[in-house]
Length: 239
Ligand code: IPE
Ligand code: IPE
Ligand code: MG
Image (tube, rainbow, N blue to C red; front, top):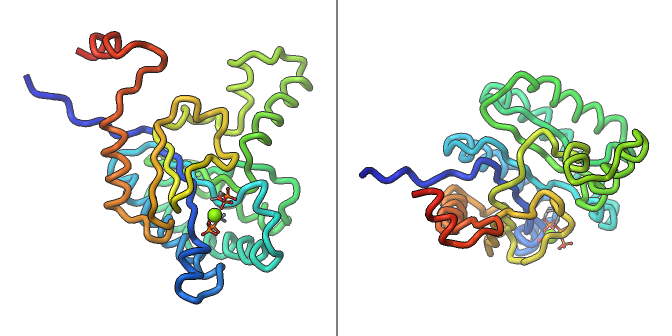
């Protein structure tokens, strides 16, 4: 009997960490690392689309990243506006639909306009959903979902919270990757990653290439996802 082809994770989530160290090792300003990080993201989006990944969710700026030096924060904001102006036409041609996930209050009107414009331009695309988490925190998401339900007078059930969450338009992540060597979540997708397979790479984000992505996907394919069941139950269900 022919064996089924190894499954590709439908939803991949990535903490793109290590840009600052990449730059510092080259005696460059940290913002140069973030610029290189944009290149790495472009490559990763293409590689994911080619492999049949349906949803890619990346962490670009956390609720806590406001605590960085002001020059770095403003550099990141400018980079986002510039990168969108450059990249959206190409992403659009490639069938990528962009969503920005995170708190919009606190962002400048210029940034918000760039995010909204990118979402509108790509709204009809269906090849790959790219969620960019920007001014995002997992705790913010849970709290805003609960606040929304409370305002509507809805009970705080799991199903209702799920629907009120900022990533309600996509299923939960299957594979959660963090680059840069740290093994922590840093407030990313706390609710949605309940059953994600975790993969930590020592590669800094600007160095995370197609081979590194394939390594993460291969690790995912070697895992047995049990969702609380026993191994015997899972094996008999897929036999
Ligand atoms: C991740 O890279 C990008 C952002 C947080 C915006 P870092 O900037 O955290 O890079 P390191 O961890 O300092 O190397
Ligand atoms: C997480 O990386 C946030 C992003 C990648 C956007 P950080 O570099 O901010 O995480 P910590 O502070 O080391 O936990
Ligand atoms: Mg970091």
